[in-house]
Amino acid sequence: MGTYYKKLQTVKHALQYYITRPNASKKDLVREKNLLKAIEEEVENFEEKHHISKKEYRK
Image (cartoon, rainbow, N blue to C red; front, top):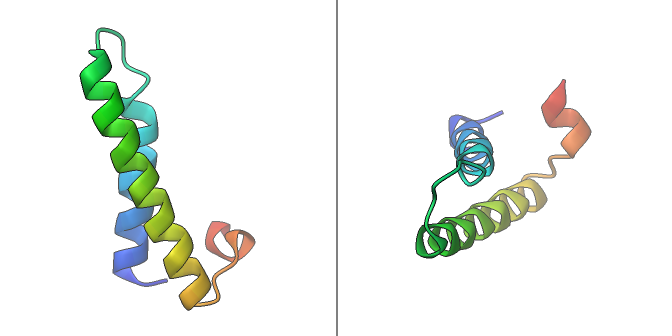
């Protein structure tokens, strides 16, 4: 797996965790969820382009 893909996955997982924090404002959550959606789309595009299956990554 390439470094770029691993970085994308790290950012995605960090955002998924970060948006569950207490005391986050609604404005922050909207912004962060939009960023998460964009990162998830980038991950999916990368997986499709490079023929990466989710099972393959988890090995």
